[in-house]
Amino acid sequence: MEMFLYPLVGGILIGLSSSTMLGGIGRITGISGIIGNLFQKPNSELAWRYAFLFGLLAGGLLLVRLKPELFQYSLEAPLYKVILAGLLVGYGTRLGSGCTSGHGVCGMARLAKRSFVATGVFMFVAIITVAIRGVL
Image (cartoon, rainbow, N blue to C red; front, side, top):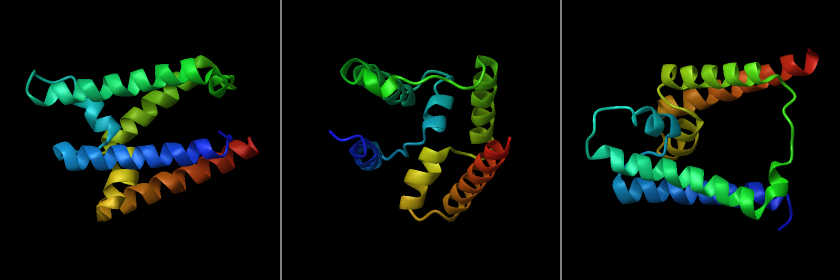
């Protein structure tokens, strides 16, 4: 498959899986909410959350085995910066009541006003970050 088709196929799969999740069990595919609520008291909600997390990890591991060339890159930043960035993203998703998957994919598809605002803010901050990063 040509490299330019991977994002298209990935987007289609994200849309299908999000629609299946909403139609199948009535849940929004917001990764931060799914993972964030894994660490609660045991209840009937935990089984599908663990299954979802297992599917994410298994899919990633399968892709590494089938297409290792997709993972041949190096980080340009020191590991501590990558970890700090990840923690800030995690904090931001809790602060914003969701992440790009929850707001950008699922919320906008449901025409939720707050998801349009949140996704606009995500995109604006990303554009500013890239512009600043490009200058520095």
